[in-house]
Image (cartoon, rainbow, N blue to C red; front, side, top):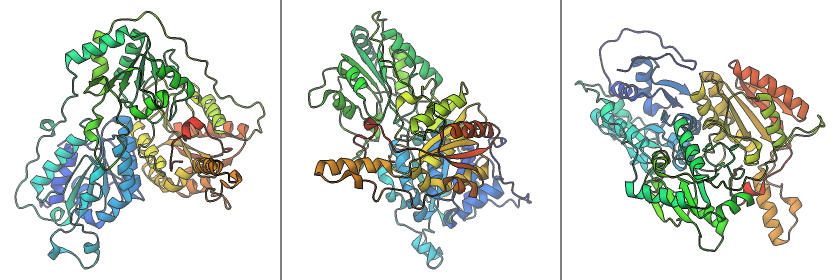
Length: 595
């Protein structure tokens, strides 16, 4: 077995007991989780996996994996998702029976769309009807529980024996971590967990069940792509879904500089290229802004590194006209596309398809491209938000960004979440962990859980986890914060509180204008006010430091200075920053129910 390691977070220590030598089915399942190097299992307790729960506590000593308790199953998956966004590695989330799986389904969809590896463990049963307790076991048993989420997981299983359970866990991790990565689900029969093992079940060696190495494009295709890029007059690189690897980051910079190619990035995904680099052509956003659309339209060769929604992005630049650039697509994402979800977006025109993840393709292209000497036009100057001269000025999201930037200075920061009112010129990303992207599914309520998961993965590093989220996201997911307090996971959360589901106000204004109706009524059915929830008190009630509401610029600078110091010292702080409603049109065009 793998040796136990000291936990980075607070761990409940079980009482010691004299092992009687009896092995239960759930003991072997727990042993396999340890062998798979799953450090944490995020749980909301449930009777369907009480056998596994006992094994994690009394057989493994609540270590490797260690249980971390949440107050809602959606948070369990969101925390695991946030952890994967930093590390690229899965941890487990345990969901109770059918009811817990339904609770967690939104977060599973987020992980699916975001291509994040999460191992979801569930339970049902007992499948044998003769073993079911009256009432409760019947309503918590489903004939085919995986069917609830099968459309948005990579694989699911409900093993009927201990050897099958061990194999299912091996396969689950292998599939979850094979590109394109994604969530998987393994459901254990409660009766199987609580069965006594009458024979020894040896544990398979996980080293013999690893995922395949990254796919390598054919040499002739790499040479063709390198030739097109080297001969291009206006090459553009769309840096999309890439890993947090520092070597991959350096390779992308090398490729851009060799080709003198302009680079565009996307706020929907994590940092992919330094935004302060002279070749970064325009501030990033959720959609193209006029400057980035112009850069893309003028390109003669476009290299897409698994760009999210390539077809939609090309349409933003070219409209209804045929795309006039040669398109090189680097992706394996089509392996996850199915007919249930439209998360695959439109079908883009592609002239050369490199069946590969971005990192190996870029490394190979760097071996074959030849330098271009003519640099592109310099990007237009970027207007950074500044702190207002009047210290009593009301807060806006740009002001929050400017104050936070001043407070953290050169300190390494990881922006684990940003509000939709954020714009690319507010902050420069200089490292792959400077920004982690959004949740994938575009719902509401994932922000707190994912921020905690990311902070868990960053614990022990020198990087300060900072989440800036909207008040709608906060209110829907705020009881995830108790887990941060319980486990001792330091982070700073700034709630950009406009006391509204404001993105929908913009949609209502748009519809009213189209129909010639009063736009002044856009707020009805949208505002989170009268009474205004006390967001800081909600944090304090769960054991965190809650500050606010903060309304003035000078007050925010003082509060954030104290908050950053507290987090650096191991604290968990929520700041309620009351901001004036405002939005960036380029970030709301085309969006539906997102806040």
